Image 1 (cartoon, rainbow, N blue to C red):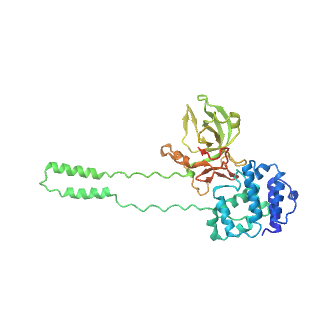
Image 2 (cartoon, rainbow, N blue to C red):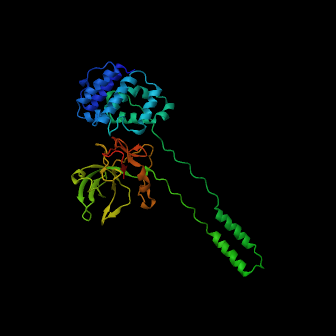
Image 3 (tube, rainbow, N blue to C red):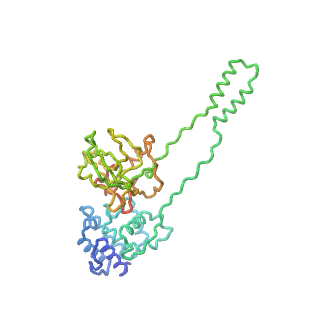
Length: 380
């Protein structure tokens, strides 16, 4: 059951996140009273739409989670309740969707903190979605400032596959030796024609065929996706449908990037915009001008609505987009002959909340997930 001190901590967390004073809400002696007090603080804040939802569907989800908190999490929190929460978080970054924590995330984080802090190590593998969400909230909402002790969440470790076993001599080589031996035994009485045929057989076997190289399975961490800001945007001098952009991705000077967004995004909306740029593509000439990257965008099925995906405010320029479970270094340069992009694109989509994902794993930054204005869309 939530103690008086933990309820006070949750109020402090919500007040601090809203930028309000600690005494902005009345004291709460029960969990339902706590939820009501937190809603009061949220309604008076400048981020009320984020906390309580800007659309009716999201508002309903926030209220549903807060109702669950009052009914299900007021007492002891069983393993069964944790399992249900873990399942609910399998396909979402935040409880009520969106690109930032809602009031439901803050309140449930506070109520769940004692249970997660004492979660046995044997249960961590069965609670990976819950722990991922919990770790995101404790860092993005600065829970430590409200008095919540930091909980060390185990992170996935990359275990490289074992090296392939040493191959034995190629069969063609063995066949060559056998054929050579057999040829050496040709009797002196063999005709010249027989000798020529044997020699031809030896030459044929002496050059073993190269085994077909199996194509490496593409992974999202092969791409170097970075947070950038468009510092200049002009009409391409040789193409009406293209923008010529200068994008700051944290390097010594901005990158020149060409994007086909003229028909979809007005120029004034492109200026000074924060975007995600794929930086390790092979430079390509587009209508006589070189492009050194690609701005990632979401688009609907009919491709009549296209908009760049957006990293959160406050993320340093040049920060690489992260994907849980994919931690390898990117390729120096993506070879277009390997068709890596073409093979990754089918798994790059936005979910129902508009969050860009790779096989369901959100595009993440140090300030939270990347967002988009188009839900259930393709990303390319």
